[in-house]
Image (cartoon, rainbow, N blue to C red):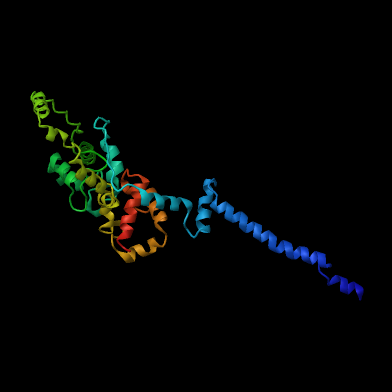
Length: 295
């Protein structure tokens, strides 16, 4: 009888063992939770832990919080300074960065690269007409003047595409700088002789409107109109239309950070960064602009 009773007894045989078992069953989970919290809030985590941290915080990472703070304190305007003497990009380089999103698949009626039939009538209209259409915009294509490339580089991209379809256009070169006129010293003399009141007027006063315009051009809406409108305005290749709440609803569930990464890396028919050379912060601004239209 005693052997059967001993077989049914558990590992805890004394009150001391029972107290120790109860103690460790509470202490170990508490230390595990403290360690997990310390790991999540730590700054120097390995790069592979970002996704785990995102799940632990409900999809919001410390990087997202930092970007949100940076977005709230960033300057309203921005002034872009370009080097007028930098080497010009080739037509192929500009095509791959700016034009391939539409002219490779033929999106929104754009003539495909190397499609002689699609380019035939356009080539016959002349090089200047093609360049003006590219600079000013035509149909679903927004104006390319004033973007990441100067007008000569856009003209080079036009020549590259047209030549791939049989044209023989020469690659445009940067216009030569106009020589200084002989009347420049006289003008300087007249300005020097101006009244003291006129001389005291701040020379930078007219620059304020220009700075405001530059700031507006750097906004997410400006990048949308430059790089995204071709597909997102008409819903080309299943791109969600601007302002279409039903099309954007499942994408909004992913969160803005995931949408930004899809735009930066490319997804489906959309090339990385929409075929532009914009920075990740500029891409984020464009995504936030499109999201704002469906909220």
